[in-house]
Length: 418
Image 1: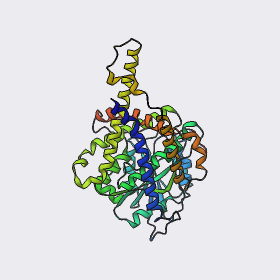
Image 2: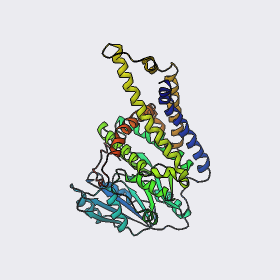
Image 3: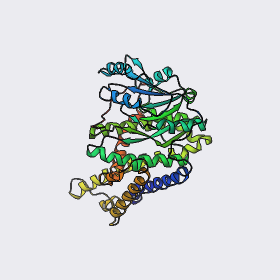
Image 4: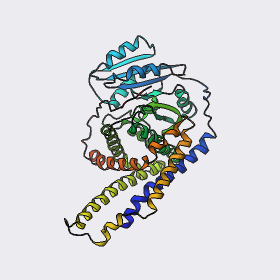
């Protein structure tokens, strides 16, 4: 029992050091080679920006406005209205009279984000696609940074951008600024050093159209089409990259209900993909993706171990007060009491992780250190939230009826100000 509790305590600490070290290696290796100045491209091929939307009347107008201001010579905007029942279609039609780059694809019935993206791809004139959510604003120069990879490396099939939170009016909004910096950004940098990444960010990702056709496009029965397409490309030996300079400003949930629904969907989608691509473990050619697969498997075990230990603690506490028979010594309640230095160690690692991450991110966002007060303890919340979502999401993935189309609803995007 003690080894299990030791694993529960030390695994998050170990991964924090892995992420910090991986991010440091990424910065030393890549930032020294790649300038943050706008890259000079040998050519500027056209780009099609796909914006799938379902009931986005609150956000789509300002998204189209911002996308029309990008610093890139040749691009089009394709908004795919996926069976919206609000005023999304009307707003899009009004926008076409203002923004000549905009075209609309209208689907009468809600068919899901993956299907909407496929219709957008078929309507796109360009070989290169940038897929963003209907609430996302690409940074003005993001297309240059994304296209640099495609032009210089023909085996690059996808490039994921660097999401940044723009709604920071509530506590949840502020602490998610820290999550995307101290955890998500670090994970992607570390995975890029290993060679494979778990997923592109569905909110902002660029694709080579020929690579998508090569792997059969997005599957419309996956809860998280972004995770699925990432594995589809990589297991077919297309390179998927992370570009930290391609910033994308996004909205995130600012209610506990909205945050939980988002993380449960992520957990279920991740489990679906891991189950789907299990064959990669038995193919030596796929060895570069094994570390990502292994880390996911260990994290799932950690999540269930955490809740198993909590249940044992509850049962033992009932035994102490006489409601149940006492547990044998190996399951003694004492094993749940951490050593005196554990809290100090945990606080130190959280502080170190936050400081290292903010040092990296400060290159892209000035003044980000002022948010450290709000998320210094967020790594602990992140692990608890992720564990709960994993425990709930894995059974949903296992028992989901195969072939069921994954339709969508507009998520909680909180309060925001430009």
